[in-house]
Length: 316
Ligand code: G3H
Ligand code: 13P
Ligand code: ZN
Image 1 (cartoon, rainbow, N blue to C red):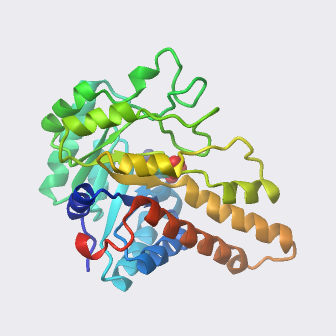
Image 2 (image 1 turned 45 degrees about the vertical axis):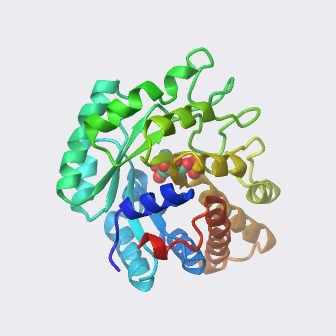
Image 3 (image 1 turned 90 degrees about the horizontal axis):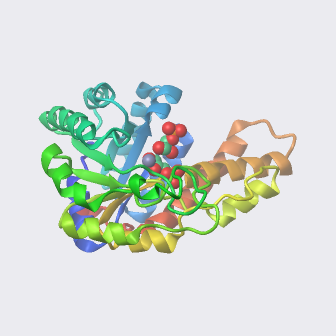
């Protein structure tokens, strides 16, 4: 089976109350770890490529790796998605490169500017059979002292339910990332996790039937945080979105959940462990291999949290 877009996946996810895992890929081992997890769990998959990944690995290498994954797993629907496209030109390039889904993230622009660039991306992408994710609100915390927002003006960073219907109608986007207090990376909250579920619920009601997306959704799993800290790392205050919060969001029209940090921490934890336990080791296969295996096991676990394990066939 060739790469697919996310329309069918989101329809099934929305109707049946689960979400598709969108995992960031930067190299072969990360991709293989994710692929072997979805193959074993029979789950639909969104592989997402950031601008940084395109720069690091080069698109031709990433594309070749993804093509092999698709060819070897004909019973798994796989989307190749651009994560956080910043301009029309970046999105156009990815459409031309064969992506089946792109994100235009113009969320830092005022509403009208966001509408304008998103509409332009939608027009070009749809003409080429590619779906578009857009974003409203900016990622950041809603607690005091957290990343991305001052407590005084925190509200202005969150997605505004009063804007969502107009935004979707005017742009024609296929899914919408809504800022509800998450942020990228391993330090999402300083005290305790807090998300704006009231807003999420309200947005879900106003956009009935429409798939929402949650960025910054890594959980910063204790297993990997502890290994990293034990084996020479220094991430004591790292904190992510609890998995119960992810499950709750999935029941509120969130059909795509973005995970990168948990992949990074899994592979890093295992590499650190090998380096400390076997200081004479210098064969990359001996540390990248365990890293890849850790990614596989972590992703398998996530597929159950998201509820998409076993759903590959119905998303084809
Ligand atoms: O959007 C954030 C993702 O974790 C991608 O990160 O831009 O460093 O590849 P990156
Ligand atoms: P995390 O940093 O929480 O993994 O978020 C990833 C993400 O949102 C990619 O777009
Ligand atoms: Zn993101």
